[in-house]
Length: 110
Image (cartoon, rainbow, N blue to C red; front, side, top):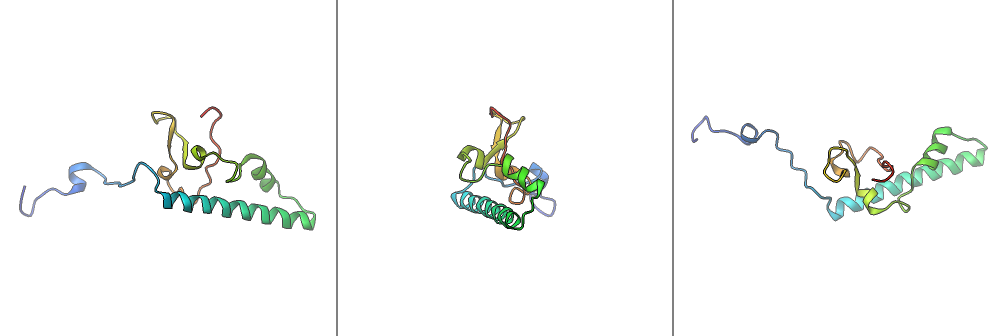
């Protein structure tokens, strides 16, 4: 339809979310660097607290439960569990605010 009443992309197909189905190599690298930075902060804080003879329970729990970036498999680094997905996995970048949320542990067997 031509003229002032032509349809737009939003009206013809709903929301236009352009999320690629796979991470680029640059996104993967930035993701690894963010994970390493978190690991460095955790180790720095824990060593500083140990030097003062103190302990933080939430930090100790993080160190016990969460694997470091080196210990994680690539499958766990870049994908996460999703019960609605076909093979129960979806790309980590589909998680809202995925750069700010630590998603390192998946259910056993997935």
